[in-house]
Structures are given as structure tokens and as C-alpha cells.
Image (cartoon, rainbow, N blue to C red):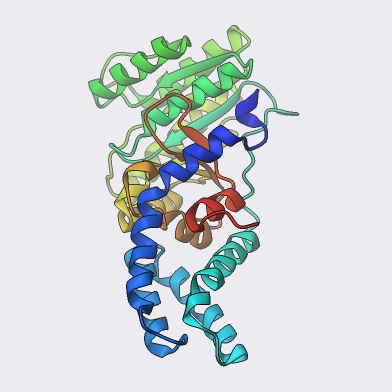
Length: 319
């Protein structure tokens, strides 16, 4: 049950290690920009704005942060540039705190009409199927009966990959032949889950970035067909984004949130990139809970997004 419990030392160390590239790149740039400066002036703020944008925090969120810092500089007048990192930390933390959707809570099955169906969406290559496998492992480790649905019927590799994860985790995978109707696979998966009294269903969907109308129609059809066998389904629509792609992740979030009612986000591959700032911008701009972050290849390398722990790891722990 630990996955759904409190943050522990091992998880914190994994988070620290996973954000090390972002932290090093970010603060190296800040250090160079304020070297030799005795106060936070317009030039320092211009440099900081550029660093935040280049770190994939996003333009709109960067402007919010800079505006907040400008107000503090104006109020305190002679703020030393050595204090800039502390101020930046405080303002990023405050921004995340104000976004009440980023609450670090897991999907809750309490009081739900089971099975609890999570439809997982996202483009190919973002770690969507891997995220499904990791979540299946965490749910199963917490004592839940899990079923996977291979509704990405357009790529043989996607079905094969999900089957590998199913075997690895020890959960059944429902599939049909290639080219089958994805909605039909989702229907069969939920029927199977209900028949065996499963608690959780994770449905993989096609990751093609086709036009918004086609995407919307396909995802809407899957949702509508699922409701025929289980009116509460899907209880969640989880959008998986690759944190290492930076601004592309923003664009994907725009397309998928326009195409379907995304209720939660998972941001993957943060351990291999210096673009961890994308988590700050996405959680601020889309007002959709960032539920999970991916920090490696192991089954356990997925964590609930805890904004306080994220800021601590990004800026260094402070007492």
C-alpha cells in the first residue's frame, strides 16, 4: 500500500536524482547571469525570464513568476541578487500552491462504482504504455484486481508491448486482432473486468496525432461504448506527456484537452532531461491535476506528483 501512502525517503531520493539534470542546468544558468551583480535589477530579471522560458516553464507561467518577483524587488528596493534563488523558490512554490488541482493525491477507488476505469491517452512515444504497466503494478501491489485493455489496435507493437507489461506485472490483457474497432476492445475489456470482479481497468488508446475532429470522434466513441456496459466509465481520462519534449508537451496537452475531457496528467521521462520546468508550466496553465511523474524505467519509478517535494528537490531542501 506504500505507493498510495506518504512520501518516504526512498521516493525522495529518486525524485532528487530524477530532477538533478534540470536543477544543475537551471542553477548553472542563474549563477552565470547574476555573477558580479550586487542587486536584482532589470537586466537580472530579463536574464531570469530567458532562463525560465528556456527551461520550458512556458511563456505565460514565466511572466507570472517574473511579475511576482518584480513586485518584491520594487517593495524591498535593494534586494541582493544572492537572494534571487530563494525568492524564485518561494514564488514557484506559491504558484503551485495556488493551483489546488495539483494535490499529489492518487486515483481513489473509495465509493466508486467498480471497476474503476482509467482511459489512457497520449501520442506514440511518450511512455503511455509503460505508464500503464507501472500503474498496473502499483494498483496490484496495493491489493487491487487489475485488467488491461489493448485498444491501440493500429500498431502491433503497441499491443505486444502491453502484453509484455501484462505478463511482467501478472495481470490479464484483453485484445482483438489488428485493425479492430478500439471501442469494441474497450467494451470487451470492461465486460471481462465485470465478470471477474476486477477493481481497476486501464485502457490503452491509439497515439496518433491526427486532426482534432478525428481524435475527438474516436475518443468520444470509445467513451460512449464503454458506458453501454458500465455507465460510470471512464471515471478518469489520464493524458500522458513526455516531459523531455518541453514545449511539444504543451502542444499535445492543448490538442488532447480539446479532444476529450482529460481529468489527470502524467508527465514522464523527467530523469533524462533538463526540461523539468515543464511540470511547473503545465500544472499552472491547464489547471488539470498532475497526478504522476515518471522518473526511470523500473516498475517503481513512478510517483505521485507532490508539489512541495518537487520544489524541495528542484531548489534543494531547506529547513
